[in-house]
Length: 145
Image (cartoon, rainbow, N blue to C red; front, top):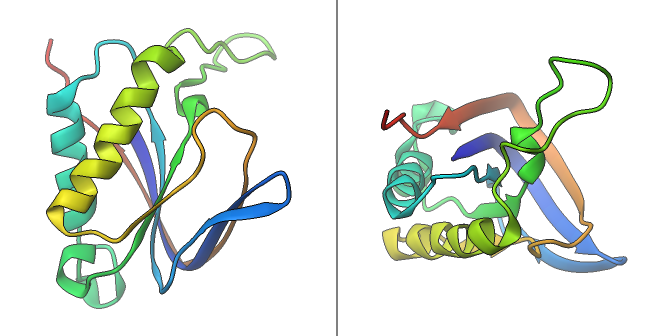
C-alpha cells in the first residue's frame, strides 16, 4: 500500500462539477494506492503512520493538532513507466480488492480520531489543493517477504 501525503492549507474534490469533499481547515491530502497482497495489517500500519507523522507546521502531527485528512483513491500510484511510453497498471489491485481497503483505511483514520473527507472511489475526480511548504511525503507499507 502506498500513499502520497501532502500538507495543504486547503483541498477539495469534485466529481462532475459538484464538490463532494473539502477540508474544513489546513490538514493533509492523502492519495492512496493499493497493490495485490495488501490487507488489514497494511491499512492499520499506514493509517497510524499518516495520523501520527510529524509533517505539519512546527513538526506536529495531525493527531496532535486535530488536522483534518482528505483521502483520495489513486491506483496510478502503482503505475510503472520504466519501459516504453505507456505506463503499466498491473501492480495496482483491481477495484474489488482496493475499494474495501480504501474504505477500511478511511474508517481506521476515523477510529484513530481523524476528521476524514473522501473522494469518490472509481470516479473521475478533480482534486484541487494549495500545498503548504510544500511538504509531500511518499509512504509505503513495510514488505512482508
